[in-house]
Image (cartoon, rainbow, N blue to C red; front, side):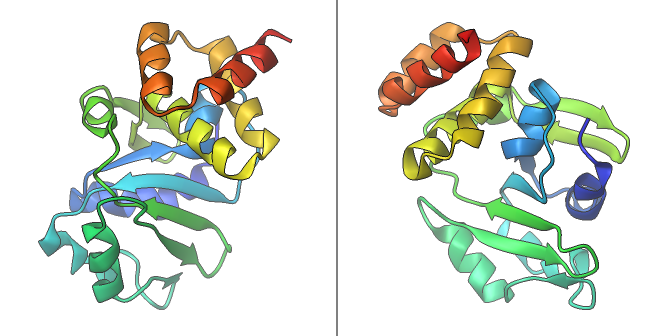
Length: 187
């Protein structure tokens, strides 16, 4: 299981405020597959416009680096590739926040999210197929092998909807990356 600090620091405030989110990235692959150390948490976050204004209360300046709310609002309005960071001063831990609601499989992911109990509290976890799709996209962008290793761990430890993944990887043009992850999982 992942170190609960990331969840306690970044997810608990979103939970308390009712801001919709999904945990993804290395924290999710550690839950679905093989644990590894990470200093950040990837969160798909979908605040209502009124919730953007409360981010400074959720993540106070004395404890966090948080972009100004107007920057957060701009990132939340992007149709794709929206992103901002929140950094916890005392620990250096970081949340990568992805507010874009334009991913072709986001609605499916929201409908198939899992509520998971962790030492730091309950979280909304993206389904493993959605986590894999995002890891494949990151691998395509940067070719970091850690993404393929994370995916291989999920393939080997979590039941997956392989038909959905075949369709999704074709739709997103990730077939080559998906085949590389499958090969690594089989090795």
